Length: 438
Image (cartoon, rainbow, N blue to C red; front, side, top):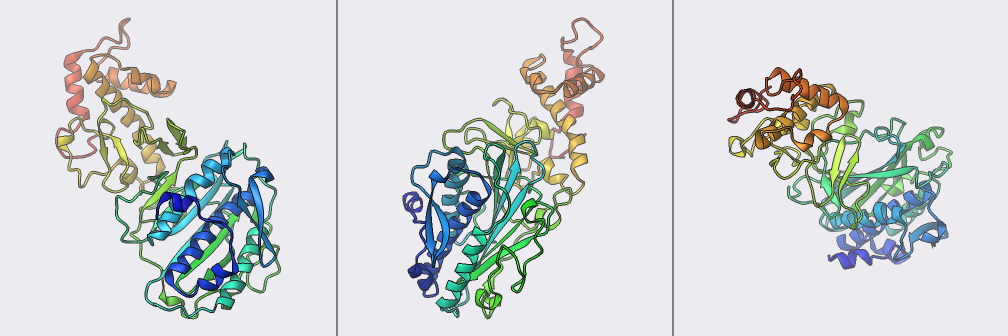
């Protein structure tokens, strides 16, 4: 499917789409792709205070939902809707997509999502015929759209929030697969701690789409059940699920190392994660920093835990576990030939079990190595020293002084002692594949 076809996909859901969704796998997939785009757009509409002029009202069986107008110039829509959905639709077309996680985050707080929405897709790869009735899909679709239109809470002002998308894939997806506008992530963002609320599920017999929400806007709503009284309806379980749901493939995933903190299961079981940059518009370049995840533009796809944007003289290597590109010097190497590229693991992956505190302690060592390597190249304090904070610079200078590379007590402390520099290089860097000499 071409990008032009993806871009022109209609968001209008018709009775024909719903009725035909139980006929063939491809017609079911067409319905699911349309439903996913409608879901993402209507979550954005219900939760972000974007001008009504950006939307058109459509109805399915008299239930209203929004579609976006063509050629929208709204920045929020361009960044967080248009740039992500085509990539997700491509992944569904290939049977790659397993789950979409949408986080709404305050611009002044990168660590704690205000709200989180999950959309999960299952694939029935065993049956050539659907055992679902189109009437059941119709009923579930109506309830699903009612749930979207009933998401509670006062809308967030678009200038006060940003969105973060995570998508995970089914087992067997080519390791090199990365859809447009998405980049490999080193860790997961913790979901909002509030209870999770079902917003419905729909099965065509070939595919099943389930959606959940959690956040401050759901805090006053008790967990939904088919018989519960709530402003956010949930789909009827009997109509909504396959009679034999075992055929719906919950495709196995390779477990990912636990993220530190209270993320629990939300930080694991993701085979391969892609994260969209918070400012990943086509016209955007430069470094984009989101909390603990540094996301670069297409001009620089380095994700080193140093979080410094270092020049090309700092050679990079790709982690064999998370596929992030990191600085060789930061990880204790001078020569890439000394590294087994098939086994190399970055610090983020190596210390994800021991926790964030261990990685924070390593951070100063990482940056000291970067500066020491720069001194080795230039025989002087490199310009990269300007990237350090005041406290970081003080620590690095203290370490360089203790190694004898510089003399902080001298008026010309920036003068490099080359003999001590050679000894410091031998003591600080690995000259063979024995990673993490400290």
